[in-house]
Image 1 (spheres, rainbow, N blue to C red):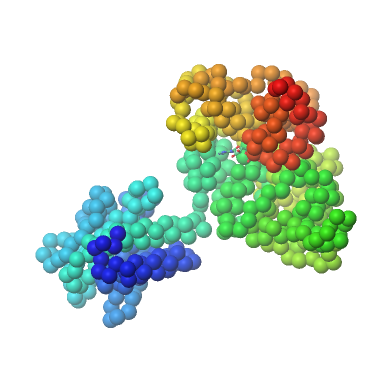
Image 2 (cartoon, helix red, strand yellow):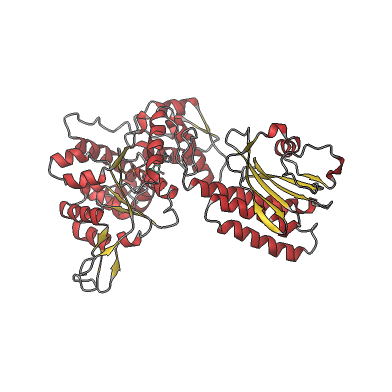
Length: 504
Ligand SMILES: Nc1ncnc2c1ncn2[C@@H]1O[C@H](COP(=O)(O)OP(=O)(O)OP(=O)(O)O)[C@@H](O)[C@H]1O
């Protein structure tokens, strides 16, 4: 990279400093301007310009320009001045051909140089470098120009790397305030799969709430992706560099859940032999997902309401409260309004939590997503097993399409992962999928909760059977902590050892 520059070591050191300046930029405009400011010290050129293609790829927008006049750098901000690059042949050539343009003597006057600022002294040399992203697509240009006739070709590789980094930083910093989940894309950077109309509506809601301080309530059947969405909200917000903490409110008895959440002081209760930080503090600056909020005991609900209203907590055994800075997201597969009417969930807490409810659709309601998700999980499983991607037989696809997936995306994922493992050839067949034919239909007279438990029971039994009663593997497949699995098994009166006995 440095073979064709004078004093490569000094140049590399300077280049590193310029990378650091771009990386330190706190906003998109500063990142772009740091990049063009680097041109003069690195190359001796008086002019640096950074361009990016807009989303339609028809317009080239000049993000920043730095032109040295009378010894000082004068950035000329060009936000909102799009350049239609079809009129600029040099730029068009570099962009469309993905080729560096390097002209050592512009004197001939044969080039249209309308994109360069007019100065009394003519521009003599030009370097125009296409900037490519991680997918090898050209997304911008970095340009250096000098009043001297100088050879600039040797700077192309290193300036190309700096420019591409600046464009990436610019996008990342811009995304801090912009829509992060383009609804037209099926797999976003966050790993969410699905572009059905119902999921696009969901993405729209997520986009609305990401940058607001609202408490989000995620509702939806088990396995619909509530935790994934909570993580997406966290990862897309300005809190993304801080912790994302998940607490399953159904997994602990009341007093243990309280000490997990609030923490305690030494001596607060028997066995409290040292101070312990609670999850509200552990998630400081970040996001706390309270999963299965519908199962939170009533007395703790009152304490949670206080936390939400006052923004402070008091650890067990402490006389003092302190402020916390945590975004709370709550999730449940249970019908909270029904629980409220049954007196099992506090109405005031419900209204406080339901500031911004998002209902995740069941997999059977996501038209077109099932097969896309199935292919996605199969590809992931193949990657994990380090084997070539498998093909799908029509019979396998038809089988999945005709199944109701009571366990939603989680069930689909488990089925596909298992099928990939069973498949010795290159194509997934219907027989690789063991759909639960033995699941008895859910009796219609049951309440929603009882019906959900019926479905959950079927899922857990199936998973334990598959793993011969191994709880660690079952918990891993189901994507829950082992203790959460144990709690659920106990609640549903399922004895995992029965499956070990069956397997032996
Ligand atoms: N849209 C999606 N794209 C990719 N993977 C998904 C999607 N939705 C869910 N999944 C996967 O499905 C599994 C279940 O998701 P998750 O744990 O978020 O569901 P949940 O609604 O929180 O379930 P529960 O109510 O049982 O806690 C996870 O492995 C997750 O990665």
